[in-house]
View (cartoon, rainbow, N blue to C red):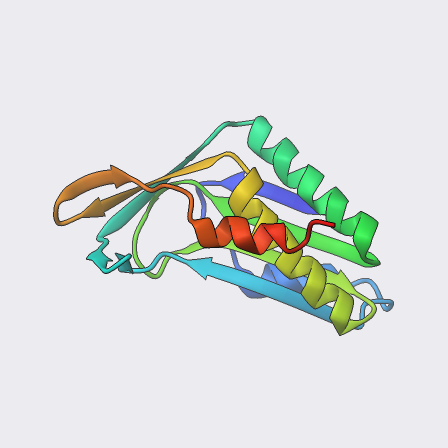
Length: 150
């Protein structure tokens, strides 16, 4: 399992390959790559800065992955989230899950991403034509996480 909160860019293909390269039990890898968009809610975005609470953020991500491991048969996981200044088209987050079967890999990947958006302590500030602003959590993210409850 790899969990990293970092300023540096990451190599998508290398990170995904590391999940299956030495494990013949892996039959599927599902991944999600999140990128910086040039707009949010109809407003232009020229840059974004992501901040986090060091230590606490990594522990929150580890708990989310542990919750996924308790639900599905996961062979390996990679969660990378960038912080610091970013520009449109920059990768922000990678969630990749290796499993023996695609259904479990897809479900676990989506679960981890849904809870990362609602439980991990990240703060996002966007640079817009009207100036910089902190971005509030989206209600749609809360709804996505809520569907896993129960």
